[in-house]
Length: 283
Image (cartoon, rainbow, N blue to C red):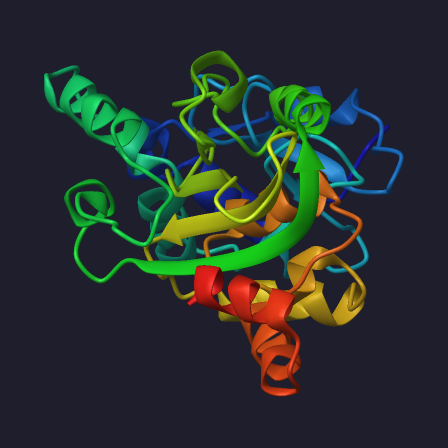
């Protein structure tokens, strides 16, 4: 199938800096033999290689919108896609935000970071996060309800299939009894902590909280666009400055019920003692 390609495709394909960073653009010959995807989009190439469960992210475009470029991180039409202007400047920002940390030379910093992350706790004491995420990191948290031991195992198993998370968890509650399971997001390296707080419950259940620590990014337009299209999704309550893989992580998790700190505070103000506990934990 022959596709009429926009003029920017040739310009970006010839850019040597993008090539050095790992962006690869399909040739016209290959594109002439490649059918459109099930969602009507056309794959133009791939992003820098990452060690993730789903291989390289794809660069795709819609023939009906030739001035737009999209990044499909999961190669899945059902997953959120990142909009990007088809310019070197825009792709430079994308590279720095989601791919650059993977392209450095091997050194001891990775092992040092891993050792620090594994020692983290999902409690209010967050000493050490700034040394991993950098100064100015933000946190956002949700209460997901009560969970028993079987539910914890099921949740941890589901995380294995979340394509927005790094393949290797940093901590597993069911294996260590540490009170939390912890993961890095696959691209931005944000830290997702699933906390299982047993201080206020019977022995066989815990309060389940999801905490995400991240470095704010200027991704507001993409986050807001997706949230407006999916207002009932759990990801719709995320702050607008989260990296795009944080949105993808929460969207894929598809937790059926959640409570924000603001909702818990409102219930606590009305006299709900249980909500007061949740508001305290989410503070």
